[in-house]
Image (cartoon, rainbow, N blue to C red):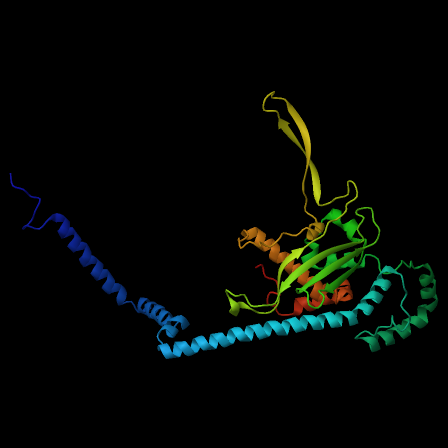
Length: 357
């Protein structure tokens, strides 16, 4: 019987391979004749050949040497910039002392420890002329009624729930507040910002001042934000100013049964040996604004945090910065909502000085 496994001395596998190669070449020719495909390939080649790094690689060694010298100068600029921000921090400390008497008076008006004079409480609205004209007409008609209403109108002490209203108005803060936090925050009387002393590492402290209450014995709760204003040795070109790099909270001395940061749950437990079942109670963490004073610590040993922890830490830094830069200096405008409208009308800003190292 004749052997049909070969044809003219050529193995069938070789014939099939040659046939496939011919088909591939024909397909490639058809693709390369397509203008859209050619344009896409050309664009890809152009983008590869014109990237900054590829361009730098084509330069002569003498030019690369000069570029390295420019980078050295850039690092020196970053260190000068760091000194600039250190002096800015000194200026912030200086002007904080000038603001403080005004903030102290603000607290007195809020708590009712002092009453503003007529001159201090006078405020002219944007529509003052229209308001005055309408007011004159109405006053003549209902002056007696207004006097009677004024006599009956309640006159609470100070400005009730001032800081709690701010928490409720600002989304960033209201998201942190649980229903059981609200009665506590109604006792909040003041929030202060304290800057680090000269010669000390750059930092600032948020002080939350509470009146006597049924929840904890502290009169002040603190949160310290540590900052850094120097270029990173490994990546000096990333320096963009001071960064919050870590924070410390404080211990809250909760009264018995009033700790809202934990909750008690009941759990059934089976004894391994006897097989009996018993019910035990244990405390587990609970969502609360007051977890703000027990912050996650930035990793100081070079180990990276997981994604959720990094997000939590970055959010904490952002909130601290917002208290310092916006809430405390402009509290009354967040109480009335005017600052919130201004924030909504502004262009989105770049992330603030918050960075987990």
